[in-house]
Length: 221
Image (cartoon, rainbow, N blue to C red; front, side, top):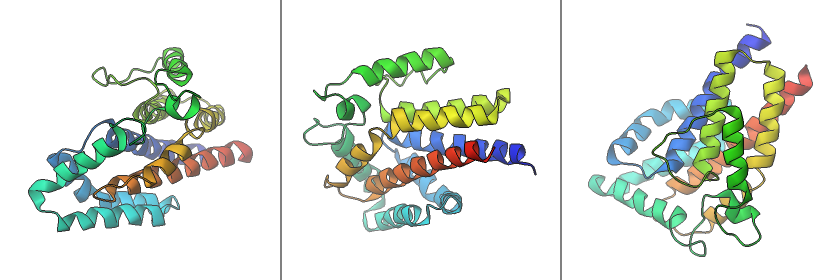
């Protein structure tokens, strides 16, 4: 398998993982979603371990296993409460998942990052799920963008080096400019379980590893 074929295969996996993260931050887990997550996580753990993320993935695996101490009918409810406490309360009590909160001096939503994302979506002709009506600088949208962008790059067979450079810059400028602050804030909020703190830490390391892989690919050519 040549480098191009390897990257095509890698891009399929990248698109899947970005979509997986996007869905986790878009809305609370239902009982069905949680059951699916617990069933599929061993294979996801193997995938993350192959990406040098074994410690972060193991922490999430442990957090999911520790849900067993909560009565089964209450597990999704406890996670929904954690989701609300982390992401849905006022900014002083939670960690708003919006770029504007961390990049704008007044911490107001619908700031310049939301406008920039709207322009990016239009220029790249990327269509998001119409029922997701959060501001355009919501974390889930950045992750959806990466998934859709990677998938369209594979489908259209674009120049891989050019794509790698563009996506590296997007991760640096649009996401990693605020994701570490968001992740750090999340770790200081007390929640019932460690599932979401582990997911957030895994996401941060995943994005950092992905950015580095894109840089390495561009420099190797």
